[in-house]
Image (cartoon, rainbow, N blue to C red):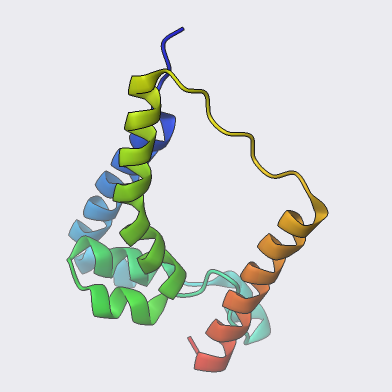
Length: 124
């Protein structure tokens, strides 16, 4: 059975999306902003993500890391993930099973909570 490199295709689409975001910088001021922050006065867990994507699209890694460090780190990992996925598809290997443990779910929530706390502490 032929294996489709879905992760590599997703990485390619993400790269194209980031590039388009960089081209939209002149109109980014027209975006409405974060509704959660407007209502509560606190940053949400994704505050700064749009500005980070625009900065990545313009190749400004320093600003991208400032606005949303997790997005910049993921952008650095995407080429490696794409290469892994293309190799996996070429060899005909199946995707490994995702961890379905309580520890994995709690870790994911803790990472999201940590990002949220960081964004609020930084006043983003």
